Image (tube, rainbow, N blue to C red):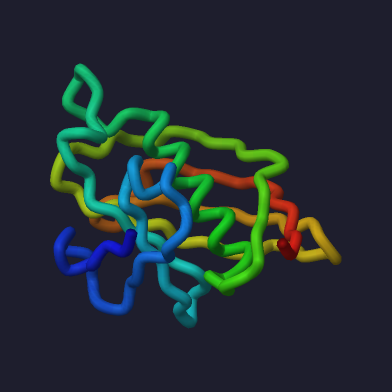
Amino acid sequence: MTFDPQDFAIPAGFKHYEGDGAEDNLGPFFGRCSEQGFETAFRAQAKHCNGHDTVHGGILMSFADYSLCMAGIEGEAGVSVLTVSCNNEFLSPAVEGDLILGRCEVLRQGRSLIFVRCVLSVNDKPILNSSGVVKRFVR
């Protein structure tokens, strides 16, 4: 299934990467390559919120994992990664309607292991720091 970023008020240049039903059910999530690195985006909806009316931490961690993995392959088709480790620190809440942006950078890349960092933010305010290691493989 493909999602149109405009349907979720996602900024221009982001696109939906087809192929992951779990991420589509959780998100949908969007990404783009930029001069600053790989960037990700998703719009928080009621289905993403917990009983405190804030975006559930599990959703934020899933989006961070998506962001780390997509940054590791820069959205390249036909290449896959699996998460080896993913560390997250929560800094501030997000709420329904927020546009959550991820700014990612590859710190180091070996033959198969890629070390990645990402900051999720709302209105330029960091809400979650994430770092991890992903393993690259070709199917």
